Length: 227
Image (cartoon, rainbow, N blue to C red):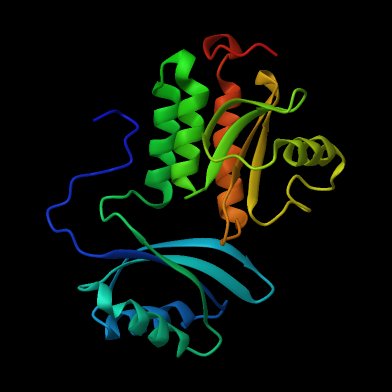
């Protein structure tokens, strides 16, 4: 197993889901949600706060269930909590690393990769970390990917957007919800990740930016890219 592997062996394999919820940013709200999870014999094994503001919070809960047939019941129970909405629920492999461990494993995989493969590894790992449909290390001048993972969207539109982003107030202030990106100036590229159906929230965008900064800190000569 490589140093950056994001999977661990597990003795018991039970259905595992990530539930993204909107809830009032008030004491006890998360506890009420956790209680509803317990009511369907679910176990909250991880919590990540994706965004807070305006009296609301967006949390991502990692929930183990005894049976897949309980998913609909789980969602209905959570929705019974006043002011709570379920944005998304999706299955994940029980062995998948979440939160800070997942981010650290991604960084380790990028740094540990063979120099000639580092940008490709970065695209693969970032796409996996954020459950993206695609990720790319894009040359903003030629609008061509230096490396990519997954089915890319129209590159003309993407390159035009990134070129115009230099004039935006705040790096992601006007970004499409389904797009996360980070400039990597020493390498003359921009890392971009996209996914359909789920927007990127503040924590995910910040993780992406920081991982892009790690790539940027590596000497361009050792990844085969020359600015």
